[in-house]
Structure formats: structure tokens, C-alpha cells
Amino acid sequence: LDVMGELLCMAEGGDIRCSKDSVVNTSETMFVFDGSFNDIRLDKRQAIQKSKMGFITKCTDNAYSDYEEITWQDILDFGCTPELLGRIPVIIQYHKLNEEAIMEVIEKCRCKVSDSLSVDLCLSEGYMNELAKKANGELGCRLLESTIYKDTLVALRDSFFQGTGDDVSITLHLEGYKISELVKEDETLEA
Image (tube, rainbow, N blue to C red; front, side, top):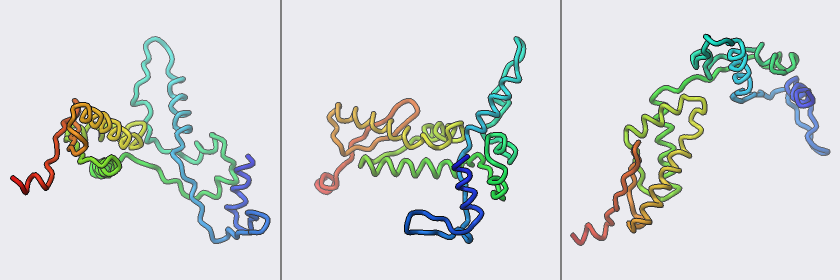
């Protein structure tokens, strides 16, 4: 409640003392309250599951979606003060990413992993499709990069054990990976 009270003072506008020597006027400031609000969604899911009791009733995954809209009432019920919530004129819902956006995220993750490990990295179509399925799941795109990173590290480790060195191309597949030695420019000129 103390934090919400402080936020309310800032959102109302006026002079806010930040430290002993500085004062900030928030009259012309736009505040954006950002978050996934997963706890609200979790409470809604648990409420649905509790309402389904008995031997015959089965709780299905379709009963509640991670993309259900969060309303002002949900936020009030979760504990936000009406005074603060009254200063939030718009709630923007997140939605499932389309296939094009997911593939763009996967490509950015691939590039980042490739650059950080200094390896030529490719992803098979099946591997990318499996990642795309996970992207609209409960965890969203949060684990895409770490999944690619982990799988690439396993392949790099095995390439060192095989003695192929560090100049390799790695292609990640659903069932594993393929390691290919890169041909150096000096060797192509000699041939």
C-alpha cells in the first residue's frame, strides 16, 4: 500500500522530492505500468480449477488461456487501490505472436548465440518449428535463446571431443545436431 501511495503521488503530478537536493515535477510525465501480471492469470486459472470438482469432471487446458484479457476489476481484486487504478486509462493486452514475428525472434536469438560463441550456426526447419510451438506457450519467447544456446554448447563440446576444432558449422536438428568443419580461405586458394 505504501508503494501504491507513492506511485499515486507521482501519477497525480506535482513536485516530487527525489533526494535532499533534487525535486522532479511529474505534471507532464506519462507513466507506463508494465508487466505480464502472471499472478492475476494464475489466480484466475486456480479459481477455474477449484470450481471443477468431482469424479466425472475433468479440468481441461482449454478452460483458461494465458492470453485471457485482464480487466480493471481483476487488477482491483488482486489488490491495487482504486485511486491508483483510476490514473491508468488504458490496459493493453498482450496476444499470441504470429508465425512471422516468432521466426524473427528465433532468427535474432540464433544470431546472438552465433556471435557470442563465435560459431557458424544454422537451425533446421523442424528445429525452428518446434521452437515456434514453445513461443506461444506459457513461458512465451523467454526460453528460446537459452534453448538454442544450450543445444549449441552441447554440439560445440562434442566437436572438441571429436577433434574437429573450433572452426565448425553447427546445424541444430530436432533429433540432435550436425557438425561440419569449415574450409578456411587459405585451403580453398591452394586447391
